Length: 147
Image 1 (spheres, rainbow, N blue to C red):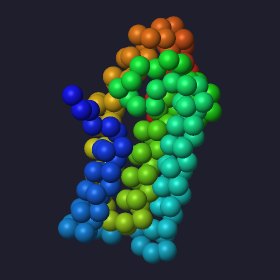
Image 2 (spheres, rainbow, N blue to C red; image 1 turned 30 degrees about the horizontal axis):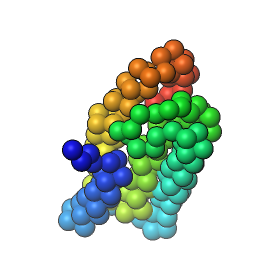
Image 3 (cartoon, rainbow, N blue to C red; image 1 turned 45 degrees about the vertical axis):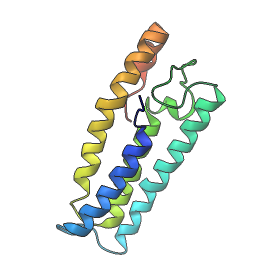
Image 4 (cartoon, helix red, strand yellow; image 1 turned 90 degrees about the vertical axis):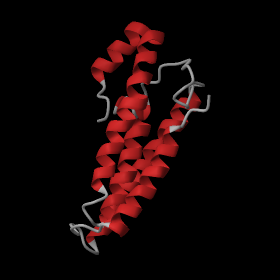
């Protein structure tokens, strides 16, 4: 069975953001040059993903959500968020929505966050709890799911 990876959801969400903005540019809430501020969360989201990916690979553990983790990573960006990659995805979408300037794409950002929480985060956190037990629960009590 082929499972759809989170990056596919991100790419689809980016396409939907663009389509909604072009088809229903309802209520321009941000205008030029202020739309350029969207580059900040966009770049921060990319950076978070790169740093999280590097941390997982440095510990020799799974990067893909359906693989079993061999190590509980709690350092680097994982000290700030239990899910820095997914947070990065949301920041990429929010930055893109801000750059587009209209209100319509923001619905995709919210739906994406809820979808990722339901499809990936809940399952991953359950697996980590089963695999790492008390160490996971101590970490989860100290570090928030998103930020």
